Length: 93
Image 1: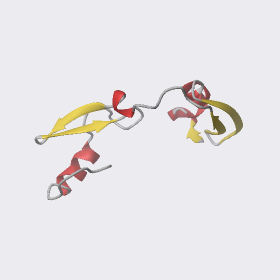
Image 2: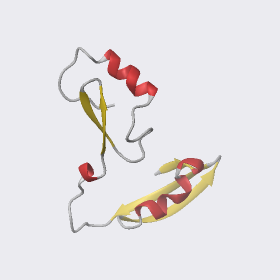
Image 3: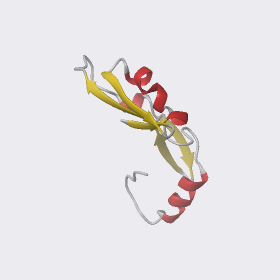
Image 4: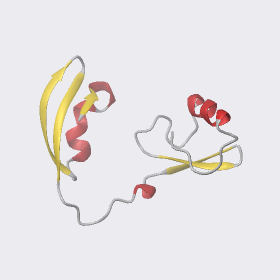
């Protein structure tokens, strides 16, 4: 795992300590490098329990924690959706 220190890279260990054993390998240029060994889980992961819905232009959209503007529509996603209007079905941004 690699992360910018000002965007959660320093706290990766705390964020996933219930899921994995982690080890920090390096920290340079405001980034941290970690390895993680996932532990077997007792229950399956339900990502829908973490998702937040946003309604835009007559449709519902889901976003997850850690995604820019979770729970609301940012300008970049709004622009993307405007270009995808002719498409039908599921879309992943």
